[in-house]
Every structure is written in C-alpha cells, then in structure tokens.
Image (cartoon, rainbow, N blue to C red; front, side):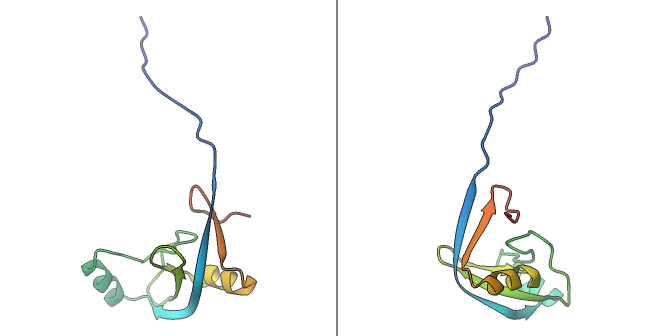
Length: 100
C-alpha cells in the first residue's frame, strides 16, 4: 500500500500597504563598522527593506520612518522611487518584492 501523507492548501497572494512619514536619502555609508555596531544591537539593517538587496560596503543607505513600526533602511534606487513619486504609501506583495 502506497501511503504518502501530506497536507496542502492554496494561500492566495495578498497586497500590503506600508505608509512612511519621511525618508532621508543620504543617511549613512555602509561599512564594516556600521555592521559591527548593528550586530551589537541585534538588528542588522544591512539589506534594503523594499527589495531585500544586500547593501554593499561604500554604498550610501537611505533611512525611512514607517508610520507604524520602526525605521527601515532602503537602497538608493528604492529611496529615489519613493521620493520621486512623493507617495508615502509603499505596496509590497506577500514576498516583499516590488509590486507593479
């Protein structure tokens, strides 16, 4: 008797909107010192909140304040997109990838 036990269900995709109060495009340059300090605080903040890309040493980071929750780090491309539109609503799909 072939008995393969498994459970599965379809989870529909969802869209989540995140509101920001402000965004400072030239916050800080990524460095090993920054990584060390953030590691001591048990909060890495070394990847872009929007696109999840690793921020490399020497790259300028942006800082943005969410309306609900703490501050987040953005790469320059995502910060430019947020500031360019003047829209403080950021829409993410369930995977945290850019939507549209």
